[in-house]
Amino acid sequence: MTGKYFDELTVGMRIQHSLGRTVTEMDNVLFSALTMNSQPLHLNEDFASRTSFGQRIVNGIFTLGLVVGLTVPELTEGTIVANLSYERVTHPRPVYHGDTIYVETEVLEMRASASKPDRGLVRLRHIGKNQAGMVVIELERTVLFLKRPI
Image (tube, rainbow, N blue to C red; front, top):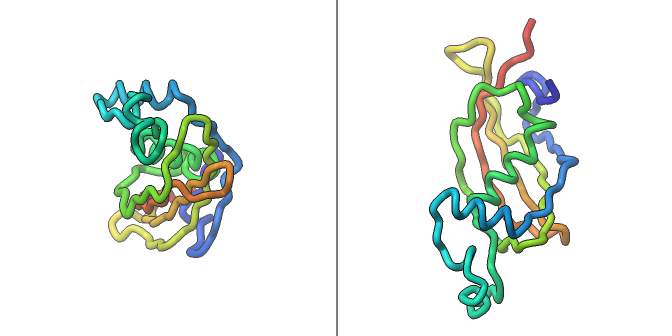
């Protein structure tokens, strides 16, 4: 497994994730269709061109999922029990078709589980940036990590 165990994390630790992903028009349209989101800002170029964005913007829930997904190989792959919560999600800038997203993670809090000695809870902050280094999403999530097997 390439993920980190609870014991390998420390409060204040920062991880600059190596993967980046370019968001395509297909990603945005397919995700919006699969989730029954008919928002014209995501699907209707004519409508979106007349808004302050000037073009379609990427579905924010897709952006959230992508940012979390980009962290998996270096953070949680095979080493978590569950995602427990997503909090304080902000989208300070839109994501457009063709933007490439990169992620940095910071460990905010940690505590061992009181009821399960093989696990611990970790609160993380993920910061997603586009290719220009501009923050497009920030979120916090709480994850139940496994401790390293003895």
